[in-house]
Image 1: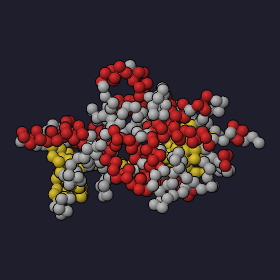
Image 2: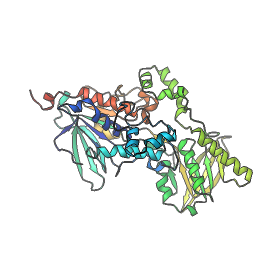
Image 3: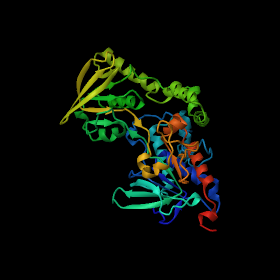
Image 4: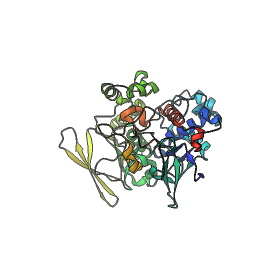
Length: 441
């Protein structure tokens, strides 16, 4: 994709996962694009191609949200980029309806995302890493001010820059490993699971262990138990067992678009209540059917006297000792706080979650214009625009990293259609008039 050297884009998207893909859709569908001054946008993605949690596209794993919580429907029910439109284009709408399931497989939803992304090849550049954002030279003030976005080609190493009135940062979550644990060819994070597993000879995997108590950990445990019928599979849980995800109707209201207002404008007591009472809708919890299936398997093995699926409850990994292909795991009991045991494994998977996006390093010197709260976190307006001082009039929008201001949906798919629409509206509302944009008196 080519970018025009001297054009000042209305918005540059940093990252092109589902969130900024949804933003691209919202910008295209905005009514302003029927006028003589359509919104201009361009997106940069450091990956070589579009992909969303590719390494967790496990067979038969399903989405944990309704198909209606797609890239567009909650914002625009008649969007041509909805999941239903994808099904129609794929000639599978009737079959999907006959399947009578609100929750498509993760594989199918990923195909939907790829289908939607294919319509935006003229606006996205891959193998393109944004290395910094700063005020452009002679940036001016007010509506004429613009940002210079530095981009590096990850293949050739060549660099270039583009100008923008706004940026939308959506660099995604960062895989989190326990302190002191390092990844290698035998120690993996769930974010790289299928790729690392695919490079192994299954016959050499006689004992594998999975660390974590959430959905990913349970799904990986089930996958390994299916794919390695000769192997022992150990699940290392910091809890007494898996906790069920609360997906009942009242609890699911915390993911409604209206709940963002309740959280954003609520008191500290209100916000605390959201996390205290409803964290079990998403964090470190597992779908009921997966829990029951794993328990059933373990019980049947116990009855048969051939137990190869083990659950090590109230246990943490204290240390990992690596020597060649040998991996020894030191386990620490949380039951008494003292007991330790060691076990040898052929592969160790940490399904230990992700850290939220932090735009500080990317913004560099520009970050000094961004205001922070008492805990040092970016202050963010209701439209996801970072609050800045009077010296910066350009917009920095965050698609992630706003849990402290906007609540539980900030890192989830549930609200991205509405959120992207709100960002698009904000960008268009603040855009300078055509006369100002052309620099006319």
